[in-house]
Image 1: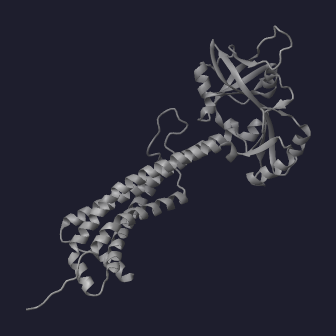
Image 2: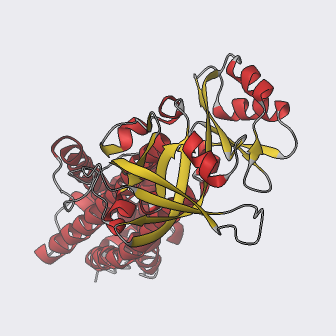
Image 3: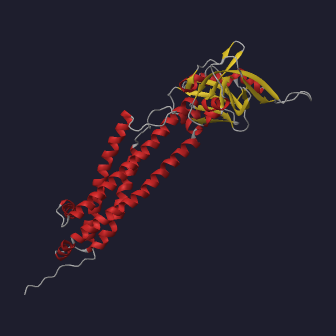
Length: 406
């Protein structure tokens, strides 16, 4: 094998009969380099967006969420709450209640979700970090305030600086006591601020105090979920198991991964579809490698015949030119990796490529995962090996040299 490698290296670096072969080899190396860099950078950008959006969701979603398996409400269990707060791995517990509601502001109406939360909510979720304006102050005496998602704020045309115009919230009446009862309960909430999660939640949610939401929904002793923040003593999965054992059978526990499962699944599907598309492009680029190796085989056909005359069999000849293709692939891959790492650090520290205005960030996020890095290297080597197979096989068809001196 060492002899095969030395011959392949000699053919790659040695003098060719024509400069066209060197040019074609350079084009093949360049194509593989660009393809490798593109694969690494595309996966890294998807990782960056996934990390950014997960961080935003983490500020909106708690570490642990306890919700009913069926229905929308939980009868608050004060004893369970007290016991849960005393658990060593629990940092804080918050109650929340949410239901679909109709919002009206200045004669503009939109359907969305009203979510009532208690004073512990910012400690459980880090919601304060999502605020674009205003502060987490949802009540002042008898006045209730609300924090609107940026998308819903825009659709309703709400001005958070106008303290005189309330946001009117309508919720269907649960029970009618007599025939002329109203179909809706109504409550005014004064806009206090705007938040963004950079997701559909921005177009759906209004956050207010849990007492105001309970009165509107006519559920004085109920909630939609218990939201729990962990202190890191236990992993989310272990905490989930410990809490589930203490809960009634009609309630279930969700970690952040469970809450964001659909989002994470979609992001990863998009990421690997993009990877597949670029990999198919790499297959087209690999035709340059096929042409390069074929030119080298033609250039070295005299050497092939000589090697056969010296005892090389077809398997040996095949191995030499297969190694030749792998060497070209590795050189192109190494150049591509170096290019990708340079661009990665430039984007990470200097924001080389910016995003359009209106986003929370100024430049495209990028994050390199070593598993993705390994997948790219294996993919490029595999494609290079497949591309080298046909020319290497064709090289075995040349015969040996037989000379007779007269």
